[in-house]
Length: 175
Image (cartoon, rainbow, N blue to C red; front, side, top):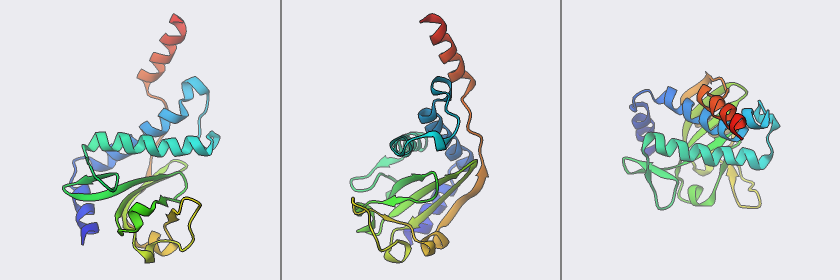
């Protein structure tokens, strides 16, 4: 099964858990930008900004792990295509191009200060029946139970890096 193969290949990546947590932190800190905006939590972000976290996360993850591009889904690892999904509350939105082919998703969830990452096949039994206006579906309760978890409830701390703090400090002093 492709799902198990992808899980196995991801687990074989050196320091996968720490690296993926770092990718999530980078994406969140990029949008929060606490030094410049004084925001310290995801709850302070708008819906659009939360969507930007997902886009940034996909970019950071693809670069960090050198995933190849795919013609239909977000990327691929050793010829296994998959989508990358990020949610601040575990409600991943699965687009038609993924669920119509029962594609795989690498789902990342951030709840307060814990990170969970899993792989799921977007088959009908793992998805809700209703769709939003963009015809996206979400992972059902049964789907969550079927998720192949790579990381569950890993504690992470969201805070700006020292280098970024220094950069903002110098920018303010020089301008």
